[in-house]
Image (cartoon, rainbow, N blue to C red; front, side, top):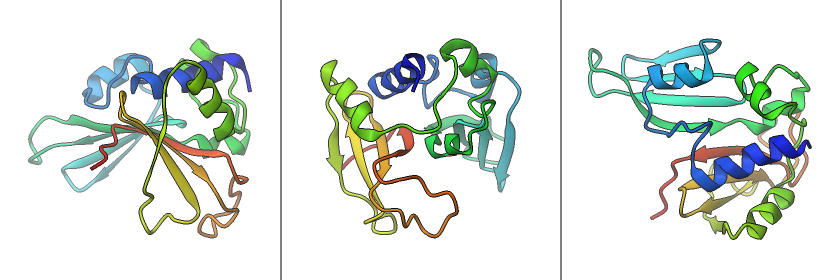
Length: 174
């Protein structure tokens, strides 16, 4: 794991942002920072996802003709296991260098703890347990999910136990 990519994850969990982008930012703002190399998927006329490889930005709108508003972002860390060096995208690689194919939760947790950034375990939705555990950073409202079982729903290439699967913000805990 390069120290730079670790810095990216620590910064994201600490601030709840990706390169300064907040979950509520518009598609135009995201494209201005992340670039235009993304896959776009729409689910009906009110939900859209822009997939930058490692980072995904999700947008919603009230009506089909209303402007898009940011809803949340996620870092699909498990995708790095494919060992595709281009997956994080040109903008993230230019800023943070190469990304390792795996991120151990304990390593990330230890780095955050040393910086005084607490993580609190939150209940996992029944559909995900017991395959995953999720920890939440209250200040940034960012969640980090990691694997607790090799059985992650029968998906090929499932990450080893203890590997970060996804980082997502914002996450609200009741």
